[in-house]
Length: 304
Image 1 (cartoon, rainbow, N blue to C red):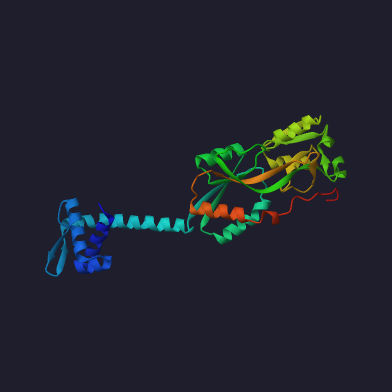
Image 2 (cartoon, rainbow, N blue to C red; image 1 turned 45 degrees about the vertical axis):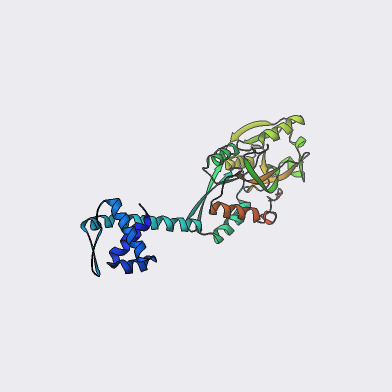
């Protein structure tokens, strides 16, 4: 059943005249008449009776008119919804964010994106890299922003956004405050509070072992706020990414000898076609001035 035939039928119902209906539908009168006849053949009965200049709808036509109108309305609604989606007026976007990435560097991006594209509803999904990779591959998130101490799988397209150093966090008055930068060898024997979700922990731990540095792990948690509060309370030290938002009472210094860095990247599935909303977001992320973003955490002195 052709939707155009339904549209012609409804036009005849409204105008009660084949000629005016044809003009309304922007087709010739013979073409409209043939379409109505084909529709009648499909439903198995007459839909109109034509008497000179008057056209009357039959009982069958009256019965089917509400159903045909519903079909037309639903199709119109589909077109409008698709138009809103394509015009970014009612689009949804799921962005995976690695849980160890601080929000400070992304606030400016999200604010600018929201101002420019108010019709896009953006949902942030937090997770560790392995989980975000699964969600991305399954199509449950559209893009991911994350880092990895290992090479990303070939199935992903990866765009580096910015690089950040790893810092050492310790409480006010700690002996490490005398250093401008802290060599890994200097933390030998310290009590360490482990951030479970740190994707670089194995790499950092390996560096310590290579240099004969022994850490006493006294506490592990997935909660960044718990770890930071315990460090501030004098219960140990921890590694933190450079752009992490730190609580008052924490001092931080860059890790050196060796310096440890990570690249935060935009990750998408290679070859997967983007929706207009995803394409717009990816373009915004790639063109954002990351080098001009928020400054890293300050090296708080004991007087802080």
